[in-house]
Length: 299
Image (cartoon, rainbow, N blue to C red; front, side):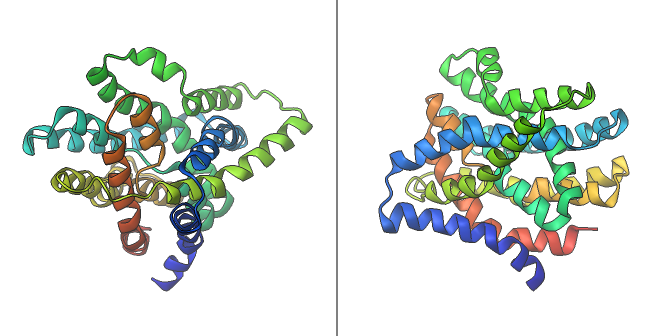
């Protein structure tokens, strides 16, 4: 258990540092919004594209991983949607936070994948992330677009994560070369994504909107941190995944929700403060649930 905690501790130190910079030292919210925009539109798409292009793929493995991450995401989406009627939740509040039941913190996911699985784990997780990003964003955008009257197709086609993931997969399958200077540039851009992304996660931590929505927040956080890792174990067994693939799928299910959920809710007119609260609660609780999942569920 101690070894597992020490593996994930650096990431949570960066998250805590981001919270300290924002709330104790006085870095402005606008500063972190600009940093997150840079990570969202440049650094992280570069990391996603670079990692997918440099991961050996074959059609059968990719299809199996697609089924695996799809199963985890659909489980989260369905369980999250059950809260609308079970709790008689406000429609806009539910549409805003339902993504917290299945959306994953990509920065933390890739960072932990490397810590726990080294380059092999990072490669597998990069493919999973590349396959998952379009699905996750479709469900999240669809929920908010229905409430706010937005065009789903436009929102999906303008998402930089989706574009980078699809481009990376196409580049990989077509075996297209990348000029060395561009490859080095992408690598250096991508190396900025994880630490800056984790700082931004910490900066967005807020518990101010918890009052009046405790049941809804508890439902979504429980789905993400408790239900999805168990679902990942069952899906791994059903699909007969290799141990490294199964472990990365469990990690994929166990990580908390991304700060990009807050960005999406704010950009599409949802309840961004409630999303930030849900994300914050999940991130804090993941300090305890992640080591337990890794310790007891990993093969």
